[in-house]
Image (tube, rainbow, N blue to C red; front, side, top):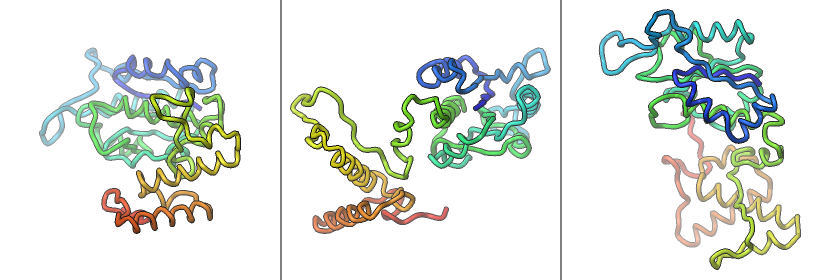
Length: 265
């Protein structure tokens, strides 16, 4: 996979990309990820990348010329991008489904916005996807872009050493992850669940799945309709709901949703 990040702070991006799983994958040549300095694609002696907004208002807007030049230069060097992604609070939510979709692409360009945003002609002409990592605003698109790159790259075969670890991640099949424990078996009076030291692999797998269902029901009921369920999962969900009802506790809501109710918006 080839990913190019266009930014005015390449050193910030490179520092993060040099470490951990992604850094090792880059060193081994499993992924080719580069930070591109937007100022290198300017044409004036001041290397200007922003200007005042038409119509007035606070802040500055990223100019279209350097961004067009950067995307076109990258395409000439490495081939046309499969997707040009703009990091913006106005984008679609970044979900596991979005991660999987991007991970199947060969070449991706990610634009890190700054200031009040980018000239809309960039979004209209160059960009194929706009992504947001949450309903809040950061000072720039570098951190969100790194989130996207990390999540996408780790699904590329060979990036993470144990493919089973990726398959068991939260959201991989719609469920939150199960609890994890390591040594010591007892720490400050709290012991590892007996089933995990029983050596009974079937019981361990059943316990882990039950914990996934319980955690998702209690913490993220909005995910239930999209989760991949089995008959045992549905039986456990029914038991959890009955237990809450018997205790006089209503199902938890997320953003006004009842568990199992999915909004259309």
